[in-house]
Amino acid sequence: MRTFTITDPGQYKAVVRALLPSVIDETQDGGKVELSIKRRRDTKTRLQEEKYHAMIGDIARQVSIYDGRMLPAGSWKRLLVNAFKHDTKDDADLLEDWHKFGDNLELIPALNNPGFVAVGEQTRRFSLKLGSAFIEWLYAFGAEKDVRWSTPKAWGDRPQH
Image 1 (cartoon, rainbow, N blue to C red):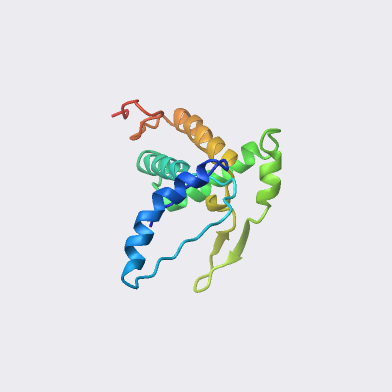
Image 2 (spheres, rainbow, N blue to C red; image 1 turned 90 degrees about the horizontal axis):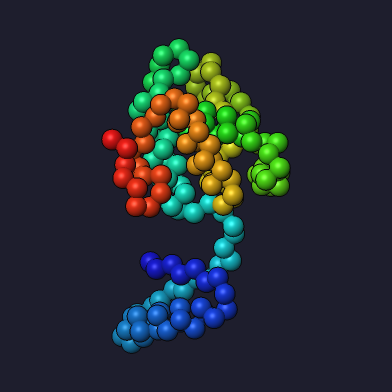
């Protein structure tokens, strides 16, 4: 599957020209092609997602919680998103994005044990701005905890090994 992002009307013709040869090839012998066009919301990018997942993995491998235990990346992600929201919920630059995000974190009883499970606040609903702010917040958190990042901070930088 190929994805094209069109940010101005002039790019439309270039995308159609790029797709036309493969559409003709596929349909000449009775094949079918499905084309989808959708309006893109201003959400975090795949690169942002890959970046903060790598950063959360680094934190999970290097930082223990208050009682000295190491946690898996998935648990760290929940803790970090919660702390990020708590630290930035009143930030003037992020107020509108947090308002759109909503306040949907809740603890619900576990299905098969006496514990509770936190559900809600998921990074897949982050806006582009929240995704960027989360990455910067993770850098600050990592600096406080002496995390050595395995991924470069910027393109062209070398990993810190």
